[in-house]
Amino acid sequence: MHQRRTILPLRTGLLFLGPAALFIGAFILLPFFWIAGVSFTNRTLTGATAANPQFVGLQNYLKLFDLSTFMNPGQFGSSLVITGQFVFWSAIVGQAVLGLLLAWFFYRRSGWVKESVQTLAIVAWIIPDVVVAFAWNAFLDYDGGTLNWLFGLVGLHKVDWLLAMPLLSIVLFNAWRGAAFSMLLFSSALGSIPPSYLETADVAGAGPWQRLKDIILPLIRTHIVTDLILITLWTFNTFGPFLLTGGGPAFKTEVVSVLTYRMAFKYFDFGTGSALGMVMMLINLGFALVYLGLLRRQGSSR
Amino acid sequence: MRVVKHVLGRVAFYVVAAVFAAVFALPLLWLVFAPFGSRATLSVALPDPFTLSNFGRVFANTFAVRALFQNSIIQAVGTMILVTLLATLAAYALSRAPIRGRDVLSYGLVLFSSIVTGTAAMVPIFLLIFNLGLIDTHMGVILVFTGGLLPAAIFIMRDFVDSIPRSYEESALVAGASPWGMFRDIALPIVRPGMMVVGVWTFVNVWGGFLVPFILLRSPTKMPAAVAIYSFYTEGGTPIITLTTAYALLYTLPVLALYLFVNWKYGFRFFGGIKS
Image (cartoon, rainbow over the protein chains, first blue to last red):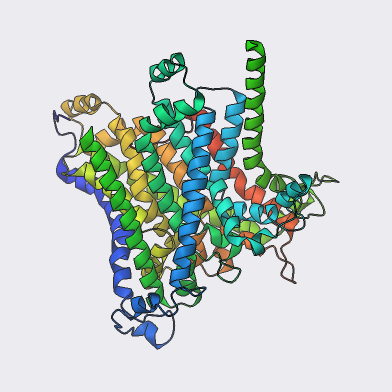
């Protein structure tokens, strides 16, 4: 981009940037370093260790990774496994596949059917968390829930979703909740494919499945990567499952974000909570670095 | 044969579309009907008899009314004003001032803000707000939301500012305008759609936000609707479904209205470009 003339002098520019920089510094950069500091102490909310927290070295981290209890219910290892399953099934399989199907199904179509279905998906995505949680609590209810009513219609046995299949419940919940984002992203990706590519395929007699596999998917590869990383990051950090199940029964849906909440804000054990938060942020950092690496590789291969 | 194939294709299209529609509509159906019934269960049923009395009872609950019409609005509108103002100023500076590495900066901040997020970030943020003496204040909630939403808001806003032709400001400069005057008289009116989008986006985010007020607020008189919705319980501890769903509907309406507004005015799409 060529600069013809400076419109805003540097000093004025920095002045304009200042207030925003202050907020970002205080509420994003500072917390990152603060949490690292607290994670090496035995800080609590009340009591002697609130005023005078002691340096405990790696003790909080060693406790998290204590292999004798690591995989017990309610412990970090078990929570990580639950989170992994939750992210894989609800984001990567649920949201991305459902979003891609929706985008692909309505691709090159218009009209009220497309508008209505896509609007329904978007509504599921934008209404507040707590409202969605209430709706799903009723939807999955054993006696009166809509899902069991549907099961009854087709002659299947009722399932006590939230008690017998809690992990599946939060997976379905989160897939349903977030599919619209992937749908919108894939729709705009499909919209950027030159129509001539597909017309050529039509002339060559390619079926819909072949078109998707051989033409569309390779062309929107970068969008797929972007989508997968973003929804993975969001699903990994979401607090949504807490609103549906509270982490239970018996810690079976306690994803890492809910475990962190329990340690820091129910037990007010900020040392352990900070160590957990730190590990979460490092995992987030890992996702972000993978994302940046992929973007750079794609940028240079063009 | 071709006609048959065409008809079958149409039928298949409608069937699949109906399945998609059902998948997204069914979990919400109960929420649409339950507020209008006098005797609510967890099953979907047409309200019989149809009644609006639940809404009347919600409005009679001063705690819930204050949460929705005062606390939620203070927190959402307060954050909206701060974020829109600061993001516009910052985006303008990043677009027009010779700040080195400004593209890396705006992108890097969005990325960093998605690392320091959710419950993980709430641990140090709670301590920060605690030390500032802002626990259980609207201000604390507004500040935390503002900090968290700003990076993405700046990113969205930059798209709008970058699309203003530089020649407008260049002619104003020749005419002797000051940087502030140029920003106020030329840039601001043009980026108003961008401010609108950022404002609505911020409002919806705060309006629906549960974790931040849940952790930072203590007294019932300051709770926003997202937390207050858990207050319609009988003395035995079971939720009063009719009231909860009526409240949930009232609480959801602004979000739906804003979506329809943005969709009608600008078309609902990605702003700030999810760059492939």
